[in-house]
Length: 224
Ligand code: CA
Image (cartoon, rainbow, N blue to C red; front, top):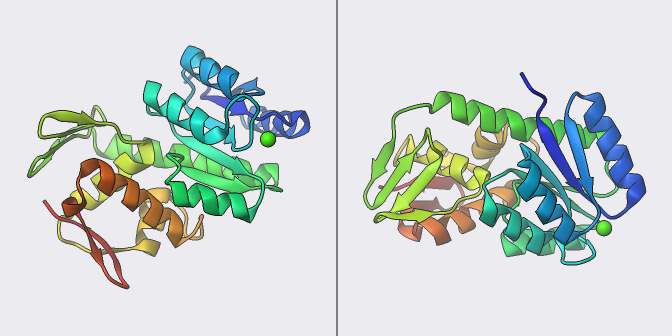
């Protein structure tokens, strides 16, 4: 199997070098860009399996880069943030990233997050190779990872897609945030419940709020 490719977009050379070296040591092919525009361009060219994207970048910032990268092609994004305050902004905006780590982080922690995201995408892709899901105005092509609402294509990030499929396979069943973190994100103590809330909010905007019901104090359920 060919090595999976990871694009690292980070303007601090010391961090970019450390991250790239660690990922290469783990067997990934790594390409590095140092600002927003060249990061977007690099992603368009090398079609990576995952992007590690710094939030504060010259050119335009990581959020704008994330939007542009995702507009081109759905690819998992791990965002790097400098402080908890930035993390709050990120979560508040619904970010379009799949996960984030706050600096300073250890390369080991970053690699663990990268692998968790890639495992999750792989697992969902494997387990959903056929059986499209049809629910009201939504049709979910699980093999092609595409969603249509009343015939119009809905653009979801990889995490939003996985979350939707996970909920939609058990309509009406309430999933707690912890269970979703564990089963969709692939770890028990990830970025916390706010991550789930953020992705649910983004998912609702895109597929229609009537499809994801909040069970107050408990979690979320899919409603066809
Ligand atoms: Ca930076």
